[in-house]
Image (cartoon, rainbow, N blue to C red; front, side, top):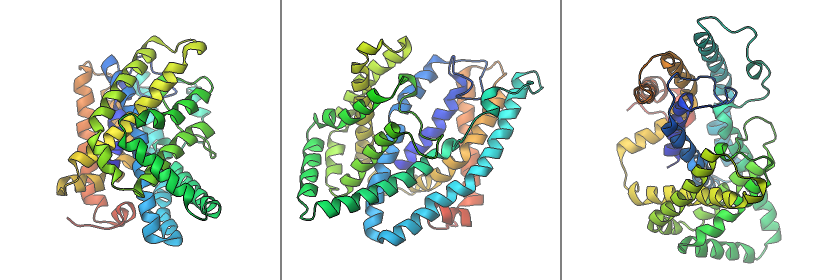
Length: 373
């Protein structure tokens, strides 16, 4: 499920050149064919994708921490998270800068605009699409620090047992998701000038992540951390995934209508915060529950794709932008170009993974093992 969330990110980025009226500071390529349908796909996918990733990451982090211990856990995370961030960021930055300049020249009759757009030359710190790796390091550190504080306070384990009971009651109940969504809704309500079209703000542009987006992802990560203590609750998620999906769909349609019509006046925004929080939490639990329900049996092809997904996501952005740039002026229907961008990028990324990553030290770094199959 974590791999699926990463691969959905590639599809999401592939939509962006086709989104009508998208600010050039948010995405550097603008196709001559626009698609409101892809704008809907982007909006709906963005609601739950990263929360699914961080919930699963929290569950696996708890499992890994208790399997390895403190020191070995951090060595593992330094190799699998910190090292890819440090090594991949400069390569991705240079590659993305090159294709963005090509896109600007292609949109300007073959010549770079003079001067270059201010947003390009005056941008500050930017973790690019690798911000999730940086944020994971924060989440690991906060989770382990809070765990230490918690153990010093709750010496008899009474609070721990109480929280486990509360989480169990909420996940067993079909209506529990309504309460689980409340902290997300409150955090969104506190974000100044929150833009529903952009969802949870991306905390990838500062060394210290913004407090409210950080809180949302800490909260979701924490649910995953607590969920690993009661793995039987995954069965409840599988049992209720359809109910959670329908609840999320209704809430997401409310949000979609608001996004299409523009944000409501401040005095009437409260239902939108609640709706977006419910859509995020319901679809996150539905997505994970569907994965437990339908992907629990071992599958070599699914396992291979899960292994490849980390590389595919880390390496995809320059390639997707380059393909968007190559197609941006062609008078083909947007659907043809969108499908080609996804198919070509997936094929090239899988080929590079098979021959240049999986059997090499890069595969060892990303997947924890080097395979020749």
